[in-house]
Length: 255
Ligand code: PGA
Image 1: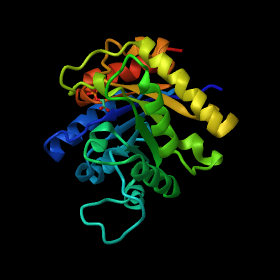
Image 2: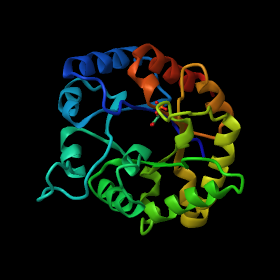
Image 3: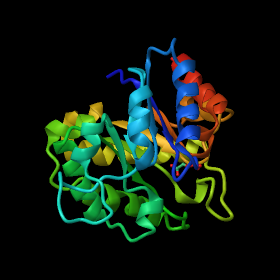
Image 4: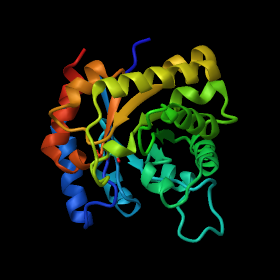
């Protein structure tokens, strides 16, 4: 099955002002007018989404970095999947390692995925180990993350779920980080596809898998060609319009 490539930018808690956010988003939107084969998503902080929804184009979709289950309710500080959809947001990163570090469990992520799907958002589920041990325990960890986060999800909705493999040890802000290779990515994505196909049968074939962890404009082609993935999730390099556009163009021209 031919799947569209997808490049996702995760701005994290950046930039500082709505003005800077608008400028960065606008530069990316302007630079992708010729892109046809690649889906592009920018996941921005909540407070910028309304402004960005005004300037989004059909080519650059808006994403959030978390979404609380449900529509409205007594949940101080939270923003629901329903509210995000109403604003024009279509994707949401869920289970990012930086949120798991605040105590978010696989069970929490599972509820958020179900709610995101129910309200029309495409969940981008992040999985990945903090470290690699010699006994290969990281495979069981990723398997457990997938099984728990995707528990009870119907086969018919899996085509809207995107999996992002993000080894935490390769993320740009992890202290003493190391580079992951396309081989690391390919080995894990083969494993992930096997788990998904055991769970969802042939429907799993439509699920896209991304690599994320210090992706930049120089190694994007290596991960896209040899990493076994359908796209990339870029953090730091998505904060620089020129670099992010180079990554998008690499994806666009690779096949
Ligand atoms: P990075 O972030 O590209 O800055 O490593 C990726 C992520 O954490 O999603």
